[in-house]
Image (tube, rainbow, N blue to C red; front, side, top):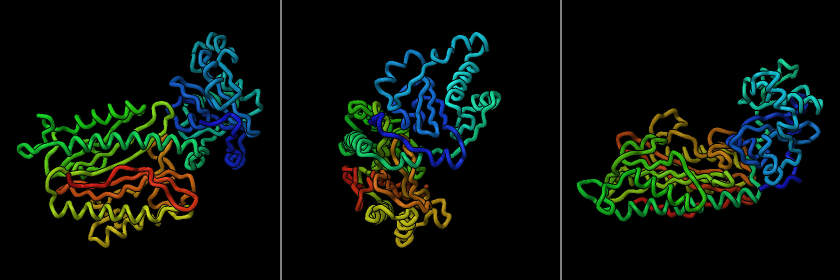
Length: 391
């Protein structure tokens, strides 16, 4: 994904905090660690970034060969290089011995004042302090770097969104082919449930090298809870909010999409809600280009809803439009930039969602979500799935 010859510059963070190095410890489930190293490991390893730009990783002995092949960091140390076994014997505590290995590398590099992320392991920080290091927890220097995607990252995200599109089509097709039996949707002789649709989504994503957790298939009035996953039989004439946010099993990047569909006859209220959400989304997407403030996009969405008679979060309402307009997507499903009250301006390379919604407990929820790439002169919508409410 990223060549070892391409440097990562976090010098501004180190200089502003007057630190000699930046240290992270964890595994590849930590998006910053994976971004910095491009090395996938479920076991703990450490990443060092010295103020002179030298990067080092400390990995378990058995991971050295793979790290040499996969990691973008060329300076690879192992626990054996740090005499870990002797340290375990001396300390009678593997965790303390591990901290000693980290201390050895820092000492050899002449690093005394260390910047760490705010979620850095407390025990490691305390042990390093006891060994004479100064530790300062700082805001992630990688979050902003990650917000602006390289062409290689965009390529992966597009691939994942294509898989998401295929999975969404499969889900909607199940609803489309269902028949109403005593107000319940019936699919191939069985009551169609949220669980059945999620299973089809999961299978489809796996076939395309992706996986998803907490997929939302929420039907009826309870769909007014934006993050309710949904359970049980789905009814005719009621909205079904389907929100899929898959991740590539190999490259670790996410995509995101939401559609709301209904099998049968919607009420006038639901139709009006859907039209309002679609209008708000179209207005927001049309604004996207470098330099536009996220808050301006969010306020436009609120304006559209207010003009159509709907309450919004801007006025403090707890019904109607009750969340932000969108968020960045990458190695995390929610990352910078956040399209809400933020005064941050969009940049070329940002990948964001635009996902306005309306939620009323006595009616249900409507949400539409597209994934958008900010280009040099505008945007590219990465979401192919049609926006059709009634089937």
